[in-house]
Image (cartoon, rainbow, N blue to C red; front, top):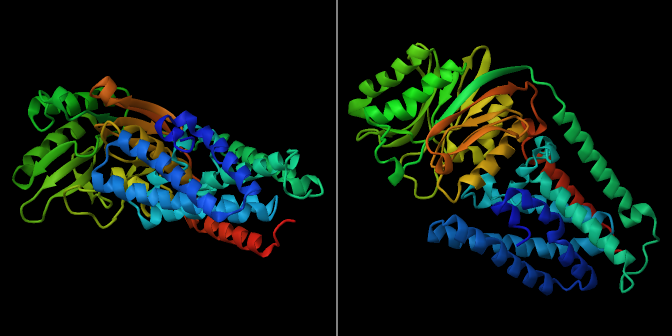
Length: 461
């Protein structure tokens, strides 16, 4: 439950620092792998079931994730039992490394929600503590948590009167205190460098959203009164406040082929009247080509300059999937990209914009009441990893402007606050990150190397 606490309330993610320490101490006392496997079974059930109940996912998805997460936590506990007793320093490092590998397997082998499945997702509640994920990716947090927990367990055992392990010589390095200090100093350094970087430019962007339920049945955005209330009016207000881009949520509108010219002209009139760039999320209804979840970029002249079809569909989502054909537009000399909702959980797409050095990425989103906070947690990590701000309009969720450092610049929960929009002056940073360039591979290779080195070392005696 301590591992999962932050998934419900983000600020409780710090409990992960203590979650595995009792288990690690037990593994140092009793190294039998069957007890570690049993602990992993209990952990998997306790970690997964409360989340599945809260998130109210479909039964097949719930069953798959319950089995999958339990397998992963059994593997983690057995890795702890195998690596941790081998050495007071290399053992904790190998445990942290094993957790990185397992987390990568988690969202790669069974990618129902992609990177949102990461055990480290909730650490975005403290963005300035995890700026180093611009190097490692979000799983790097687990290396830190696993290593610090392992070092703590060894220190506890060494100082315990009932310690069954022979003395380690009590040198600072053998006991892990020096490594503990080095890790903390490195984290402080990397986080400080990122925190105090200065932006090179800025752009004011607005994002609108609303909720499709019984409360909004009198305001249908596909009818003229609803279009004026939910889209045209907020766009006018945002333009008056200096916004250069106005975006909606995912599936904000439904547009059939036969009505497309008329509907597109509605948006074009708004763009021309207020000299705005528009990014509109809509569901394309087509008897010939098939239905698609799409967005289009529209210039201030009322011309569609780019369209994109969602690449990663959620379970049971209707429509055809896209090909991942990401493109950008230039707005006031800045490069602006876009993707749709679930796409932001897959690093192949998010890193694409990082490598292009997109200055701002727009991500129209459609969530539901129980998933809205979890998705917002996840998307903040993508901003830090690739060093670009993300602005998301939301249907059935939270519209937000997120800085490249993971800070929430503005947000509106449409379940709590009703339809509306957020607007923020978005700071832009130019440099690419290590994660954008190389993805998870540097962390994975380093993790494998740490495990191999630990295996080569004779059990600490």
